[in-house]
Image (cartoon, rainbow, N blue to C red; front, side, top):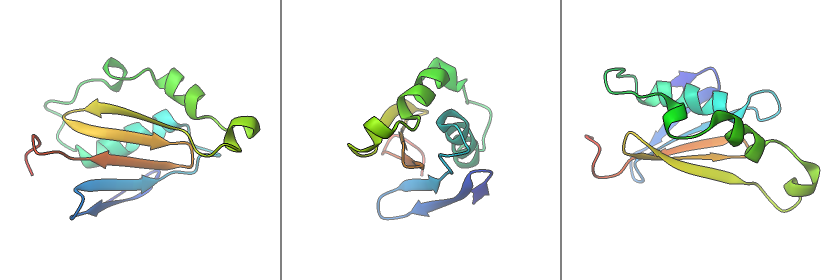
Length: 103
């Protein structure tokens, strides 16, 4: 699978989707929506992302900052449709499926 942020890969052993986005040109909130739309292509039950996380706060938390970046990447995680979504300031998005999701 691929999206505007890049290819979305699925790891069968960990039941996780992974994608990379260019954190210099793409806001984390845009990358997350893009990856979520790729993974959850069924729109029947999809609720707005802003019901789960504030997109502007997510972008501020993960935006590049030379002082904070020296301490390593920052991440934010939240649940969406029964999956754990993690966005990292280094440009990665991971969606981990759990047993409650129909595999």
